[in-house]
Length: 360
Image 1 (cartoon, rainbow, N blue to C red):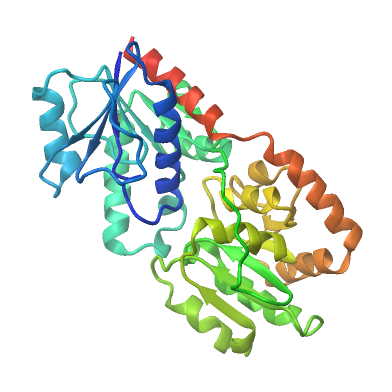
Image 2 (tube, rainbow, N blue to C red):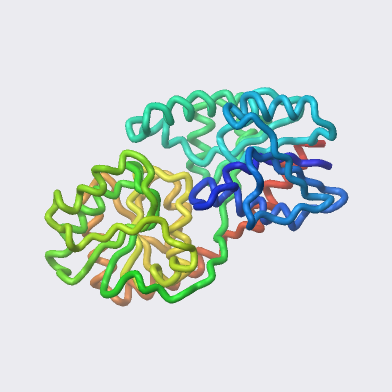
């Protein structure tokens, strides 16, 4: 059996979100490659240096043109190049527009449907239109939470059995001592974009430091889109000196950032899953997160939940964690148990099982 995979989301320098999901799946798929289960990874550019090494059973196919790749270059190659894969998997919203073989896609969430005002118009147009045709063409649709599964079924009117939940896992991160932050701080990790609700977090933090004057807020993540209001928020709420923005950090820096934080806060308006919740728990950091979308699935009974629209609720729950050592200890213990439920090996195994069923 030959499985084709779109590897472009993973073929980037700084992987977050769907890029991390795609890369971790590729690494796990590689372990299953054999004479009976072969893979060809389709790319626009040469594979990154940390991609699995090409073998007889794991090959890379670089095709063009890069522009409108899923609309023109990829479909053309699938039709005319031999050998043809038995099934084609895209670990993103965008399937090849035309294909002679069954297609499977991954849709992380429908934030572009729920909160269209939080996206740039050009991005929104592509997400809405390309995802719609991809969902309609796909034999199976993978997603990463029950909340997202329900959203997909409701929005696109697809049969229940076409949407499959495969929870993401946690990547192993080699720890190194961080010299980036001293003192007491609460931590946010994620792309700077409106959906992450960082402006309300900063407003809530402004209320917190009245009681905790030595506390700081560390916001870690690369700039995404419509982030100007986020960067201006500390000055707006009079706490410019107490909020620190750090761009994308290397993986080895994350463990110490989590371990040394008083708590991790992810007050998102909507998440497909919320991997940083599990990352924080893995490194013994209490988690405060939103009570919406998939986040209760990620956090289980180990997190404290807030109404992401309510600044006072966000501030009160963070204060509760800061002020109650016994609660913190209990949350850390429960967090370690919650993390055990998730692994990329399990994600890949369940994904491959479905792909093989499609290909038969």
